[in-house]
Image (cartoon, rainbow, N blue to C red; front, side):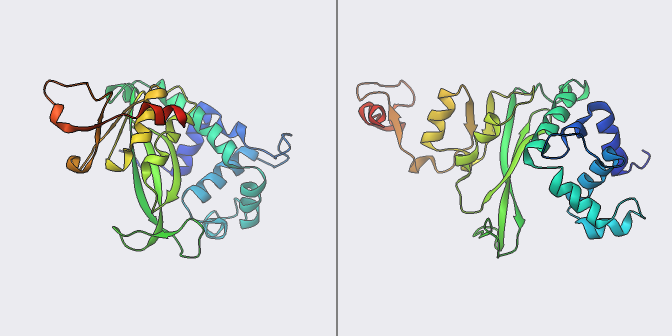
Length: 241
């Protein structure tokens, strides 16, 4: 296959989606930048690759200065604009034929990846299992192999707390109803919320023997799995809270 340049790929994606239209001054007025689209794509490359403006400017041979890249990032791009651009890309990806051979976008998986961070950081925590300070990048990936939502969470947090966020904040055309996860994706409140929101939560669960399974009431029995249940639901408690 021929070599492809990442900036050329960004330019090609913008041609088909026009996602850079979401970027601009916070006032909402038209950008006064010369070659605004080019500046936006170079800035996305700079910060998306974690180069930083000064390092990127050294390799751009006069296309943009470090100040110009930093200025665009501070004044023309923010989280809400990036999320709006992301929706355009997701929707365009969804109409392509190739991803449909992998999945229909009806299910997704959630998992976290640890990234090293400086200790002097509000998000940084020591991760016992992996060792070292960092944060967790928590991703929701559809069965058509596209990342729907990602955000950073602290290392010490039980991931189930954040597992529904990725589906609720996803405003693209890809709307999974089934969500897979590892053991970190399960907890009793999250199962209840998922059921109320119409989400089929299917995490892997380890240490079954340590979990408490609840009957709907103490007189209910199950033919094959009755021995698993050791308690019944306190409906009065749920109603109270």
